[in-house]
Image (cartoon, rainbow, N blue to C red; front, side, top):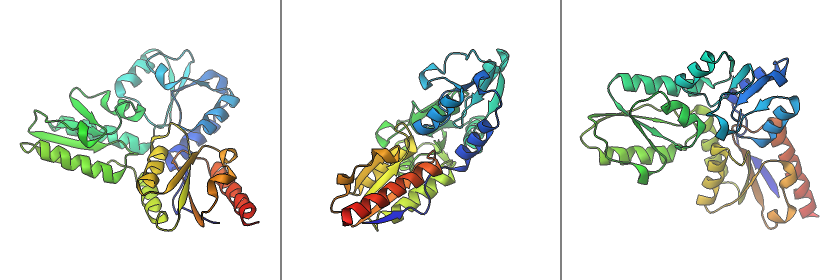
Length: 284
């Protein structure tokens, strides 16, 4: 069994930089992480072991008790940021700069008089942060969710980890349903996401099945697995090497390997090593 790793896979610079920042925190027990730093259970367990307080995503409406608060890579609204500062919290900001770019783009569109449409998941923490400072907006996760908006100008932007092909289809639907409006598109899908999507597209032409490594709740990781399945290939979404089972790979001549943007290099390497062991066992 041949194993081919995608040309771009795993941790992005935004997640890497966030982890570097937290590695330098001297007293983690005094620090609360405002939601999940990244949607990767391996990383979350490591942070818990170091002593960081971690708020669940559902608890983000509450003010943390800790004096120091980590803003996660997904960012928060300026309104929420001011609430934390007003409560006397010291902020450790690990917001990805590409997420900050989306916030700024949304504000510019609003200031230009445009009705803002965000392509993304309404319940995703990144999207919640983006729309938290907007007075008038819509969030559309699918073409079916697109509406007719009472606006002569519509500005469209995207959750950073949204698939490019799906975003393009939603943009076309917005234009079709709102012929009265002048539409401006700001491409805010991040380059690491695009790189991983493109690398996967190239990988799918070479393999019969794909192992996708990443957190169960990671939007971009789940999207990678969905892309494989839409192409008719078997996709095995795992968080760690120990989850791999030898019988999954019976009969496959070539298996691909990719990972979401919050997957640690050592996790990806461990999965690859386990696949190589399985390949040897199956050949015997």
